Length: 149
Image 1 (cartoon, rainbow, N blue to C red):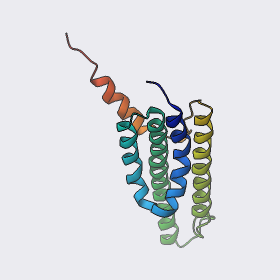
Image 2 (cartoon, helix red, strand yellow; image 1 turned 180 degrees about the vertical axis):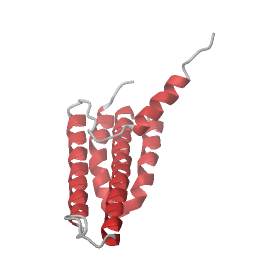
Image 3 (tube, rainbow, N blue to C red; image 1 turned 90 degrees about the vertical axis):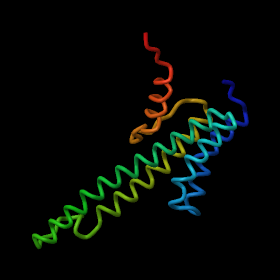
Image 4 (tube, rainbow, N blue to C red; image 1 turned 30 degrees about the vertical axis):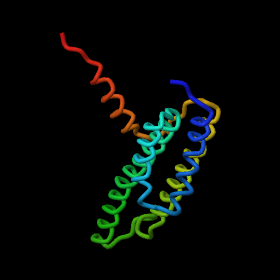
C-alpha cells in the first residue's frame, strides 16, 4: 500500500499528540489509542496505524511492568512493616518515586524517538515494549491464510 505524505505526517505527529492528550485525558487515553487505531485503519493510513499500535503496545507494556514492580515493592513494604524494620529506599518511598520518574522519562524518550524514526522512515521498536498487539495482529492475519488439505 502506498504511503502518502498525509499518512506520514499523521504518523509523525501521533506520538506527540498522545503526550499532549495524556495531560488532558489521563486514563481515557487507554481508550483513545485503540479508537485511533481503528479510525486510521478505516481511513487507509497504514503508517499512522502502525505508529499508533506501537504507542499502544508501549503504554500497555509499561503499565504491566509498573504493576508487577509495584506489587513487588508493596510486598516488600508489607514485610518490612510486619517485621518492624526498614528497607533502605523502599520504606521511605524513594524507590517508588525514582522508578516512576524513570518510567515517565523513558516513555517520553521512546515517544520522541518513535516520532523521529517515523519521520526518517526507519523502523523503531522500544526495548521494553512487549509487542502484545503486534503478536495478536500477526497471529490473526496468519490464521486466515492457512489452508487445510
